[in-house]
Image (cartoon, rainbow, N blue to C red):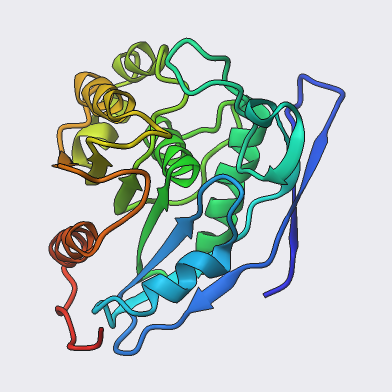
Length: 259
């Protein structure tokens, strides 16, 4: 698939920022198409890295869409440009959030899912910064809008985050508690979070705190899995958990034997 441009702005602002996304890789379902999941890579990576792994999973009913983030200066690297879903200077609850970048990436995910057939279940997942973007998409779905106030257009049936964190965590609980509809949406959205105890890039406590924040905000259908000895990467035990969880939560026909 070709490169895509996403424009972010609001009616109250005169400036509009454009983000140029990289190549999107698609893994077609080997069986009956029942679900489509957008999977988001980590900082400095690209969509093809994950598409190669995802096509080996025993999930024949899932179509995987693996986009590539825009190349942009990233503060945590001293402004050095690399692929990133949003700008980040520090991975912590008190760090400033790049709402423009987050909104652009969440909108890109929604655009990729918006053309799927009506009977197909939709999801978003990711690793590291991709997981953070997936969780931000989940909050947009629950609140019904992006950070800039524009309407969020798609319904998510499942969200997966590996070795990630929750952006915009400070205001989430109050925003959800202020809306009965948002509270209902949060309670029903299935989320799987996985994190390794030995992660030296996104510390385990960030993942654990993100899960706690989501649960306290009303995300009751959340599963948090811990992996002893796991660093900032994935292992078969973790991907097996993802496969089993998606099969159950999305009501898929089941695994096949391809590995």
